[in-house]
Length: 145
Image (cartoon, rainbow, N blue to C red):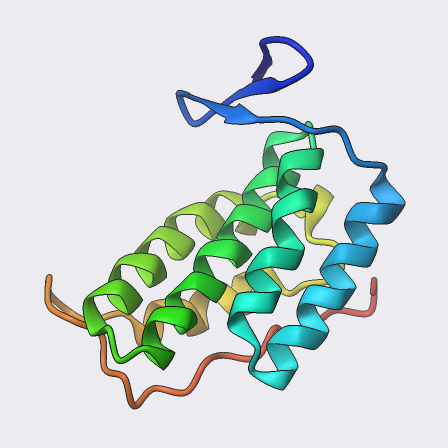
C-alpha cells in the first residue's frame, strides 16, 4: 500500500479514501459494529466500519475492515431478498478476508480463519444467487479481544 497524500491510499491497485482515525477510535468502531451485527443490524454494522476502514493506513487492517463491510453489505442484500447481491458480497468478503486470514497482526480479536470458513460455506457453488435461507455467520472472537 502506498500513501498518495493525506486523502488517498493505494490499496489493491486502486486509490482509496484515507481519513486518519486513531487506533482507539477504530477499535471502538469495531466493537460497536460487532454489537450491531449481533443485533442483526447489517446496515448499521456497515456504516460503523466505514470510518475505521478509511482511517487505517495498514493494508491488513484495512482488509479486515473492508472484508467485514462487504460481509455486512451481503446481509443487507439478503434482507432485501437479493440473492445475487448476497452472493457477490459474500465472494468479495471472502477474497478480502482471505488476505487477512494468514496475517495475525490485525485480527483485532476476530477469528478470521473461522469467519472465512463460514463465509465460504454460504457462497453458491456457481455464478447464481446465494441461498437466502442461510443465516448470517457469527463473528467469532479470540481471547485477544
